[in-house]
Length: 153
Image (cartoon, rainbow, N blue to C red; front, side, top):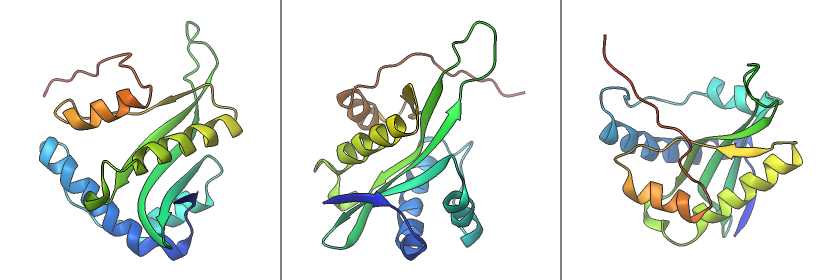
């Protein structure tokens, strides 16, 4: 398996992987998520950006998973340390290949990407209903630091 930056040649398989990811999002939080189509502009924006990339996992020349990562500056608030964060926007491994270490390799590559870009720590979000996802992230060294709460108006 190799991990590399995605290119425009990967867009079609990335669309399929995003569809898998969105099905999970709709299942976990239908009040916030709908199925969508990731158009070429979506990918062009990422590929042309200076602060984000998509890393792909490839086995036998076939993309089987991805991590969408962003390098962000911590909010400028007096009580917050001026740190950089690598934010894991999205992560997906083809459903039929999960639990084989591919996601772990994508996390490892994302951490290295963050270090290379001056990030101090890595952050992501996981649905509270996604118990398997939370267990996966905990195995990768993530720990809950804050809870997001909301109320409908």
